Image (cartoon, rainbow over all chains, first blue to last red; front, side, top):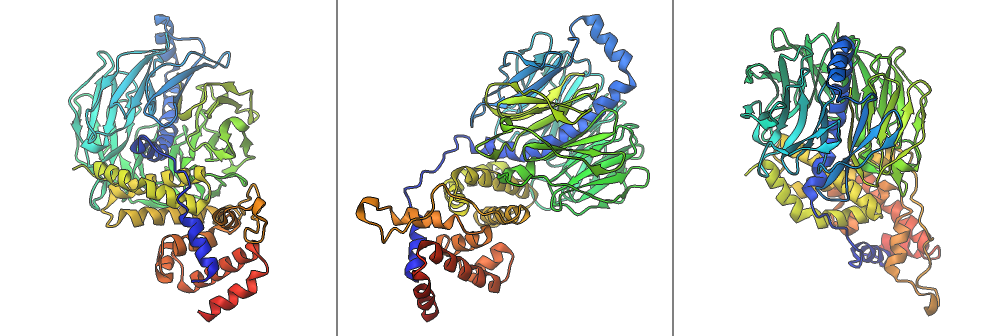
Length: 437
Length: 172
């Protein structure tokens, strides 16, 4: 060992260096895993909601107006963590004025599902094993609904039926899905599903919830379990591509697609049988899928290589991958790569790919090409570090995309693809964002 | 016991070491946290999928790969430091800086691949073959990366020392 080598060793071993402490490491890690998943949740539920709104706008609108509870303009709900703890709050932003309202004390907001009539936002708090109903009329949190109790429980995904009557929560650790009645705000009997439920997609007619699971131990196959929403009983689990963790259903309700980051497996909802998996080239367990509201194309984001692959739902074949740069140069932050999310506008013409960096890439679904990257300002990063948890949602009219950043919510005009004036919010770690219909 | 509980136990036990490893690897406390969080997130996914025999080694491997692949993909940018490395052993006592700080700063100028090799060699005490296994490369590459890193460090720390270091090494 030379003198230089000894000096290197001493410098590396230097015990004076201060180490950070993580008061609740599992909370932090779950957030990091979930990030990959919830991005997807937003990406898959949002177009579905948008499609539904387009199909039955009159019904939704009448319900809302008759009750008088629905605000004239949609409200953005952005969940933030306060520091490295299991606490947190949801910030409402009025889309008419672009002003933030008083923070709503919900606790950690992992994911938000909003009733199609817009009256209630359900906030999933996996740290407290609860779902917190938030009245959108008063922007106040109701009594938390327990959906689990102990460390074995891990509520990880929330979905709501199109009629707004039932919220389904996947409990990954218990291999169950917990139904919550929105009429009584109580949890029903857990429904056993395939080992390790990861995500839920509900058919547009509201009759069936499809749950994608991959086993929490061993090397078993991933499965999709259909649940009849009328009886909360399950059908036979359907084998899908290894490691599938995400699911989306076409607007016509005929096909559910399970995604593993490397394969897309079509499942016929008529026969509940899986077709041949479509092979892509990304890493297992990463990426996202979203289905165009026109139902013709599924878009899969793959990580390594970073591409968006259009998949024809008619032929179940993959088209030419569109190369994307998920991290703009000069940005640091490893977590950023896992943060990517994409969301399609209700008109189906543009997919917004939120990079792990401080930017959004608009992708034309008409020409299947990536447009000019939309850059945000310093609200989305601190000390040149990207915030790994930034989140994006699009208004039902498709005119504005809202991005939750560290110290502001940023509106982006989808017509010009330019960011508007940042809406300041109290500094925090963004977790998720959702918009009322 | 549920698998996630096992993972939580492992994390509680291994976290300080992983953060320290992340710190020496990236040279930056904040980046270290980012890297550890990402690596543990990816490892938790893998943990749910299958049994991992040596989770500590697994996580470190994910960290090294995430670090190196991120670096590769983003243009091989060098990390700039606030102050350039000084010459600790030649300064007068009034300007004396702890040699460990000087070397630490010098390490920041190494490209990620070379830095990872140096950290695995001198911090983790791995053999060239083990380093090659962790980084998914050949022992030849590990050898050349190490030599390049040492030469560069010597150059940065004290250009006059380069010749001597090289002689010393080839003599051992």
